[in-house]
Length: 117
Image 1 (spheres, one colour):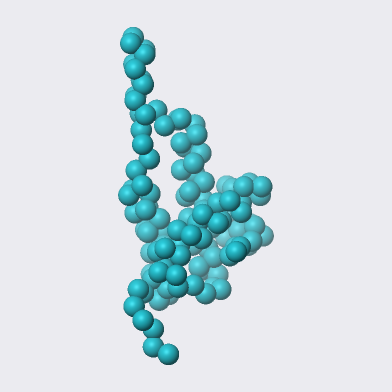
Image 2 (cartoon, one colour):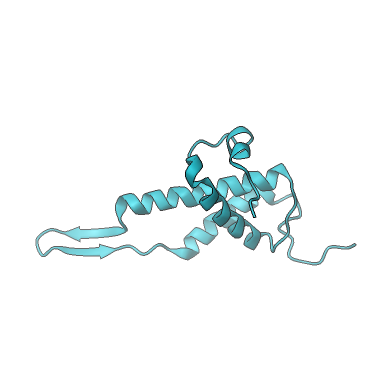
């Protein structure tokens, strides 16, 4: 399911970081992360779509950083020892939660309880 089109990303969110061919990959991953943070609560609001765009950009940037550094934490040239840095999943989850809170705190979408009918 595509929650946010690339056209929305460009024209409403004013995003320009993620190239069009890569958009659906990062939008799909961001959608999953946002749905996790909203306990599956969703609507068709622009604010939710902007949150998905922000998370997609965050994930894209983290991927680009990992690709550029190749995950190398430290390197010694004498004995050629290389230490690789593992991505900290809890830090990533915390950053994504902060993004979701920034966009969705006052929407009711992050409420984990039962809504009245």
